[in-house]
Length: 78
Image (cartoon, rainbow, N blue to C red; front, side, top):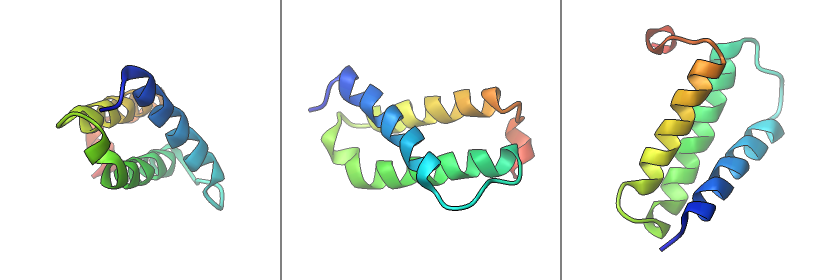
C-alpha cells in the first residue's frame, strides 16, 4: 500500500494535470470543475493502490480546500 508521501504526490500530480488542460477557465467554478474532473480520473485509476477509502478521502479534502481557496460555496457548483 502507498504512504502519506504517495498521497502528497497525488496532490502534486493533480495540480500539474489541471495546469496542462487546454484552454483558460472562465471563472472560479470552471477552475474547480477542472480539479474535480482530474481528481475523479486519479481516483478511478489509482484507488486500488491505497487502503480502502484513503485516496477518496484525501482527494475530497483537496477539493474542499480548493473550493475554499477559490471562494466558492458548496451550493455554487450545483
